[in-house]
Image (cartoon, rainbow, N blue to C red; front, side, top):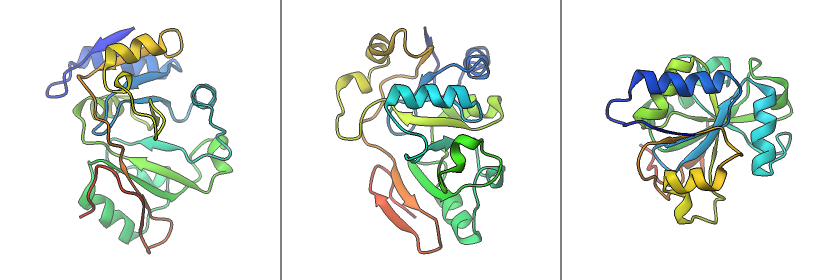
Length: 201
């Protein structure tokens, strides 16, 4: 199923359809400020296992990232130092993934990992969805980092490729090809692990 949503003024009814799908454990493809991504309810263990299986990822060994609507409830999912919070506040919303130590509210599937990626994309569609949803969305790029093809930018081609595998594709127009900049904030000696679209301020 494909749902068209416009980034400038997301239709609340369409946003509500996506949110209900997430609450039902669906896998959803959506635009971000970088590339199209696949996501699910980050607190639904069955949905997380399903998305990891789809992407061929072992959740016990791979870094997992979640999208939050803002920085207000961050302490529920990650441990954030004052210095890290100031850095994130300067750069978010934006095309960054900040790696932070995990906190106790994340489900057991994250517990063997000592870190979690935090995203607050500068994209009106996914932010409207996550705000309405009220909790974080686990997020992964639709494509492999080293293999960007046209299907990863065109929502109709994404829907074609993932038909029967994901439950919903949000069409927010053509997506980008450059990934987020990944910044390690595991301590206050911040380090850029991958330079992507975002330039740190």
